Structure formats: structure tokens, C-alpha cells
Image 1 (tube, rainbow, N blue to C red):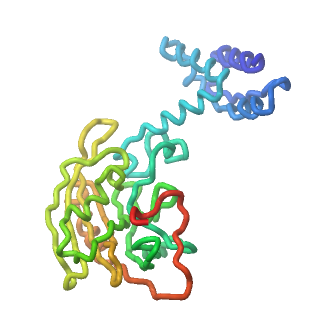
Image 2: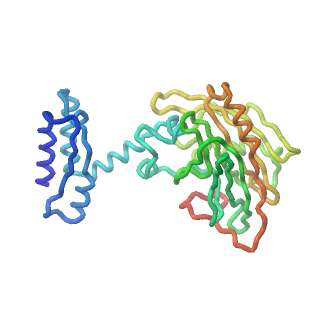
Length: 318
């Protein structure tokens, strides 16, 4: 503790020093091993301008810093709390919020959006240089799973990490495409199912578009049956609430769905963009991506179908 107080005093006295000073806090030899590890973790690169200036508010920040140095665990808790305050639109656009890249702390307490995607054990999502994306999914139930091969082409980067299932996104524009799987169709055809059946996977409290709050003004503009009933195309609009400005940001999307032979779940590809870009050409690209979508039953083999362990990311039917 004495070492930390001395180091903190050094910070206060650094006002006359260079604009940026590196501090490495060395724990006292009398600390326990756990305390030494905790104290070492507080080695920081601190900007003098960010700690203390001649303004009262910054002086308060400097005082708060002294408290943080004496209690590193509270600093970790505060960082996690700040990281969990995310901007919906910034995340949808870039995958990054004002606190930085989505990390463990920001995901703590938040479940991965339930897209219904279940991966077959031993497989990975792949993207070729030309943008071709492929994955092998499982549909049905644990007792009677069916393997499905899914593919589409998107000119966006394939996202990775625990938050994503199969999703490609342009970090600069926010345009993106992702896969989703519905609950059981109970033997109904694409034409017999209401539009709400498909949208519930996207907009329910655990849906992809509800990750940081339920969208508003969800409207189906058009629903079309294609390829003799093998595909259904739904055009829709909705708005996401901006957590930074409290304004609703309109967004457009195309949803294309198909039910592979011998299965009872619809596989969906959802392509979306903000309303302004949609009017300026994003709609044409979204239609091209939707037209590239394909989902068929995988060839049967003697290998047992097992669900890939992703810590709770399985389809609700599983």
C-alpha cells in the first residue's frame, strides 16, 4: 500500500513534467502473491492531461485516481460497467462501440443473439476470396438432427468471435448479411406460414436485431413466393434506437427463406442496410446477395451428427 501511495503522489507531482508519463507500479514484497498480481495489472500509460489539469473537474478525476490505485479491483469493475454501455448503431455499423472492440467484459451479462444457428461438430464457417461463404448446420431436434449445407456470396468480411454465428458485415457502412434458422414449421410450407413466423426469430427479445433493445416500426413491405414455392422473399423496414442520441435510425432488410428437403426448419439469409444507403444502391446489392443464397440437405453418411459446443448457442429446438 505504501508503494502505491508514493506512486500516486508521484503522479500528482508530475504536473510540471512531460505531457505523457509512463508509470509502472511495483508491489511491495510484503504483499501476498494475489495482491502483487493485482497491483502489477495496474501498470498504466497515463496522460498527464487526462489526470490533472487546472480545472476542478480534472482535479476530482485525479482524486478518484488515487482511490482506484488503492483498489485495483474496483477499476476492473468500472471498466466492465463502462464497456457494457454500448451504442446500438455503432455496433451494428462496425462491431465496435465507443468503449472499444467487443470484449469479454462487454459480453458479460449479455447472451449471444439467438439466430437459431447450430453448427455440426467438426465443421467451421468458411469464406473464400471471392466472398463465397459456406457452413454446415444442424436442424431438427437432438433426437432426429438433419445436416444442411448453406452457402451465399457477400462482399463483406466474415465476422468471428463468440457474438456471431454466420455473419458478414461492412465495417464502414454497416451493411451486412447473416444466417438464421426458424423454429419448427410443423410441416407447413413457406406459403402457409405468416410473415411474423420468420420475423420473430429476428425481433424477439433474444433476436439479432434486438441485441441492445427491441426495434420499432417493424413493417413488411412485400412478401413473394419464388422458385415454385421453394423460396420466400420478404422485404421489410424497421428502426433501431440510438443509445447515444436517443433517435430512431431507419433500416431496410431483405429476408430470403427456404425449407430444405426432409427438414422442418426454414433457413434464412437476412441482408440489411440503413435506409439512406438502401435508396442509393444498397438494395440492388442486397438482392444480389439474396439471390446467391442456397440451402440443401447434406449427403447422408455413417458419421454421427453431433452439435458443435458453443456454450449455449444452439437452436431452441435443441
